[in-house]
Length: 355
Image 1: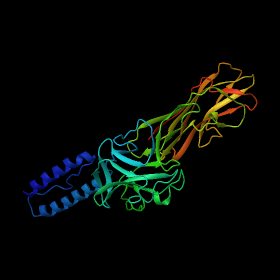
Image 2: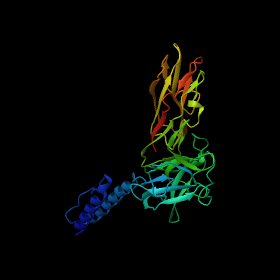
Image 3: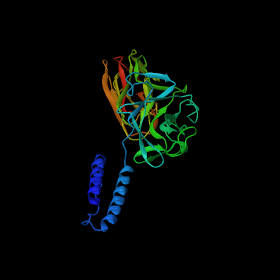
């Protein structure tokens, strides 16, 4: 009888844990009904519990939601500007692992929202031009969304918002004022506010001088490929200085983006058309990363004379970056000839990234 009960229990344990990619089996066979069976049953059961606990302590399912600025829209497909609330909404599911001090507990959640000015469950209001991490946590039975302290700079986390890993899930390494205790907040993403302490997701646009893009929301899980583009449809213009500058000297010819972890590369492209007015003359256009006075990589060189213009595309595959970065369309002349830029009135600067 002991053997039958234990065999049935073992079968259920093996079957139930097979979905984790690991199974637990009986370490020792039983004897033929002797008194030693009772001792062996206890030893086997102890070994099985140890095995099951090791499974429970292993990697768990990742968070199933996404940060967004638009309620009910886990993937934003239109620009959302000057938002004053952060939202975490279900995407591939409505479960998120939250550490309780012993285990990661897969916890159901409905859409979560919190004002950027809130100080009851955040250490402070969102400041102007600040990078912040966001966490989901269990506040005495209420699932909440809160942000951590400001980063030290656009590219450096502060000591108060460093991350650590529990069972493969990123969590806050230290306690957050008015928020989760150390390791109790599941990291879900990062944002960068604008100069008015608001949150933006701007996909760019078309105008003379372009329309700047601002991708201020980055997801730690369930990232999707997004793109933003600034198109300059203004008339052609001349530039004759050898100093590198932003195209048309317009801040509209740029796209900014924030990255919470250095994991994915960004693809940058600038398609332009220039005409060079004299033999020996030259003009260059290309891409800047956190610099409007220098090119990253090689720019596109156009040599003259060309009255109809030379069209080409500058491309840069940026290595994985951490924090907030500004990508810009830049240009340079030969320092002598007043060469023409944006000849076709449709120079286009774009960024493709996982966010």
